[in-house]
Picture (cartoon, one colour):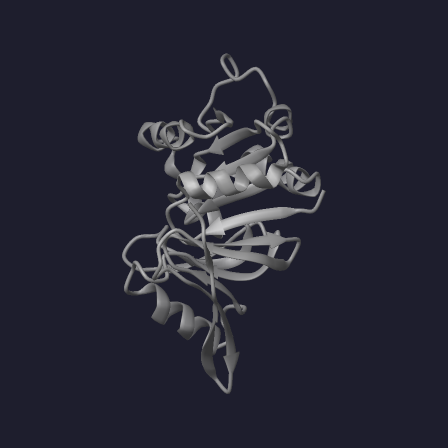
Length: 229
């Protein structure tokens, strides 16, 4: 199976979940939600089940704030026994620290190598790249390191938060961040290994971009998306 990751700038709702489910090739895939970045938010978990309610999928949730008395299966037993893993938005810095402390990062790498479909929006998209822009720290946007499954950088919420685009441009133009992919809310990219295979959106104005450096300036190349519903 190819190694596939479906990312969105923000808003990984029913159409994106349906798209991820189709990528599994299963009639009724098991879709696991990993809400670490949201601190296992009950609201985020309820939202996941609501988004899956009309889809022909088996939705599961794996919390990260656990205790051995109630969590009797290992991370590998849980995460490698599903068809897709979708990660929540939230605090990317905290997410990465928790995953590394538990060894979840290594299990996710095995899942990717085995062809389990991965995905998510915001922190759930940023986590798969080498680096990107984040609001995980106080006072101002900053940078964060991800798992590095996808090479280069990433900027979610490209059209939704005023400071995202200028910071991403400045970092890339100055050579302080690798070139990479920016996604508006409601727009996303499907990667197979390191290759862009499909660009999608659920809102007509939402787009994705490849941002690189030329002559000391940031250059945007629009990746035109197709509508999914």
